[in-house]
Image 1 (tube, rainbow, N blue to C red):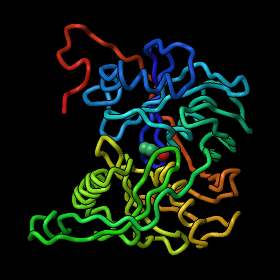
Image 2: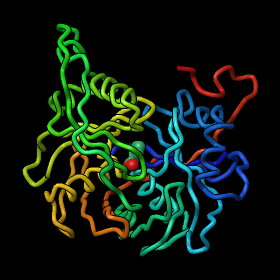
Image 3: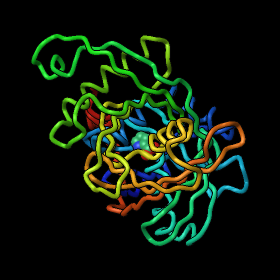
Amino acid sequence: MHVIDSHTGGEPTRVILNGGPDLGSGLLEVRAMLLDDMHRDFCRSVSAEPRGQVAMVCALLVPPVDPRCVTGVIFFDADAVLGMCGHGTIGLAVTLLRLGRIGIGHHLIETPAGVVGVHVADAHTVTVTNVESRRIHQRVTVAIAGAGAIAGAGAVTEHITGDVAYGGNYFFLVDPSPVPVIATNIRQLTDMCIALREAVQAQGINVDHVILHGPATDPAAHSRNFVLCPDDAYDRSACGTGCSARLACLAADGHLAEGAEIIQESIIGSTYRLSWREGKNGGVIPSITGQAHVMAESTLIFDPADPFRNGIPT
Ligand code: PYC
């Protein structure tokens, strides 16, 4: 299996160029469900340790249904198949440019969430025009063990309020974060997000990612975020689909005008430039600009005698 690894603002993407399972030629969302239901071992074998790494998102290239698209892609991490992936789309575009499969300029890519646009500005810089994104629920309040209890300091219940929004994946967004959004707090932020995801899901609301917002380090940036992914790894980048959900909430609250640009910092200080325009169905069409760098081009070997060929079970 031939793969190319890149990172987008620190978050890894592994593009699988061949050797993946045959998912047929149906709609991409149907092929994504098939991958999720029937090929979990394959997904873990490529994304999880020892062959993969924590936070790895894989991009399985598949033939598109829409002939305008340069490729179809299904993104997945060690635990879930994703509807869309913003950092992964930036990594994929930079990888396809390096391979000579696309040039500088505009292209379309088909994902299970829909067709997205990429504008490749140079060898590293890509703007993704995402699927229409929208706020689904405003001010959802959940009760969790407080930050002190999560940090082992006492059992106080805390009520936390956030919005639920769609940006290609489903997010619970909290602003301001109950735990300071700084890199030394990654353990507490992770535990807080896991507790929030469980509490929101217990209310029957479908969310797969959680985002906590805090003040930015750079005065030019709008905020800094911490994003928890379905496999409980945190996104090293500011999360393209998460930023799309955030834009939908900012727009719905009248806090960001159409076309105005903001900078979103990630927990490790990498950045995306964000803006939105009006969608056709009451939501927003997000624009996310970021940078990716290719790191490795490899052939993966799956030795039948390797007891961990399908990844280390968690
Ligand atoms: O950038 O959309 C994103 C993303 C989703 C999961 C990890 N990154």
